[in-house]
Image (tube, rainbow, N blue to C red; front, side, top):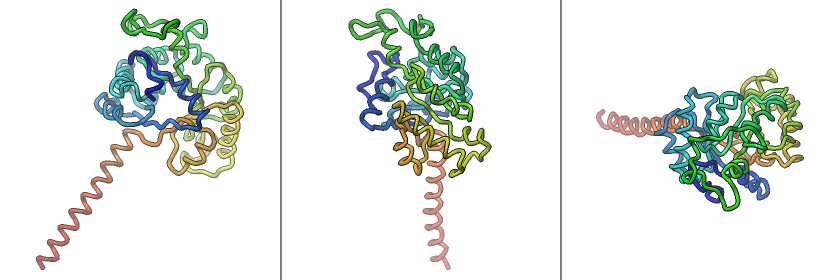
Length: 286
């Protein structure tokens, strides 16, 4: 991902081009989820080989200040090799601006259902004339952090680099998916599988039900039709079908799960090793 690094690490890297290249080269960007609201753990994740990280400000309560610090931690401690993508908690322009001003590579917009919602989100993420994002005077300092290639301004570069990713997780969103994919400025689509299943009246976890399978088949078909990359959490057993269907940004691990499952596995091994020794001691003492 170093090829898409910004000139300054305070700026947003070029996730839009990374997605385009992933589509043309049949590559997949592998990510890690950030749900622990802490700089210390994010530093560790930033040092890994993930292509991108998914900072979840929707499901993890955090202040805008902390969210910005997490973005900047990823940019700095990965030295630009990992792209920070923020799932904002609302559709409001404030959170979109805060994430992008901090240097996020893109924003995930949850619970997107209508064309109007998507157009508003795209406009909030782009400087004029493509949108109405406000210039961040304290983030981009003239001659210090606003570097741009010769012949361009930082504002133009930001518009070229930043990815806007609507998240579809309802029947209404699926109904409007084809129109949403055709909106200029939409760079990828995330399918919120769990919430979609529940909106369809299905259990959170499962598979094979006709309404859900039909929805996913339609998403795959539209992604192919419009050359639109899909994004999301992909369980390992769904990797083949998901990548074949158009997923080009996937996440299969997150900090909470890695910590919990990793510790649990280590404890199981520790207990097994200790039990083996104590059983041997007991056997030899009789």
